[in-house]
Structures are given as C-alpha cells and as structure tokens.
Length: 125
Image (tube, rainbow, N blue to C red; front, side):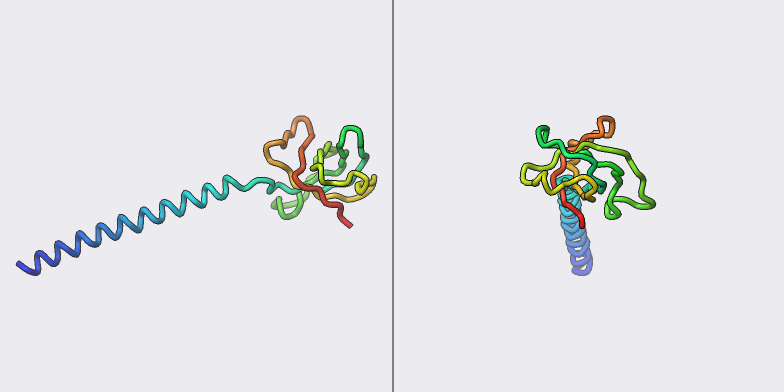
C-alpha cells in the first residue's frame, strides 16, 4: 500500500516537473522570436558613390550589392540606387568614386523605386 502511494506521488511530481520545464521552454522560445523580430537595420549593402545631391540630401550609389555579411553566394550588381543617409552623415565625405557601405532601414527598402533610407552610411577606404 505504501509503495502504491509513493509510486503515485512520484508520477504526479514527474508530471508537474515536465509541465514546468515545457512552460519555461515555451517562454524562452517566445523571447527569442521577439528578439529576432525586434532586430532592425540588419541588411547591409555596398556600392560606389556616383553623385551627391546636397539639396535633396541623397547620394546616388552605383554597383549596389549585398555586403558579404548579408548574403550567401556570389555578389550580384543591383544597379544604381538613391540612398537617403541619416542626418548625422556628412554628405561632403561621399565624393564621386568613393566606396560606401550602408545599413538599410528594412521598412524603407523598396526594390521597385531603388531608393532606401539608410540607418548608417560608412565611407570605405
């Protein structure tokens, strides 16, 4: 009789422990998904400055391609794009012929218009 009660108690403890472990796993998975969904500005591109329009605050960048950290496989030339840099970027540092890298604000990435709002622009040397 005592063995039956002890065995029953162990089964109940095992079920409760399993339920707690599953609940913790589900919460960690949700946190991971939220963290990944909250990540922005992860798309990096590179190109060559073709021209700078100081009045419009844009940079025309040719030979645009995904940075090696944002692609798998060979680089593909996506043509010329208009890049709107952040207000902290000095447009005078982007002279024609200069290589630049820019991080794209993902919600502004419009392939049809070939215009992007960059979260960050870096002049490469």
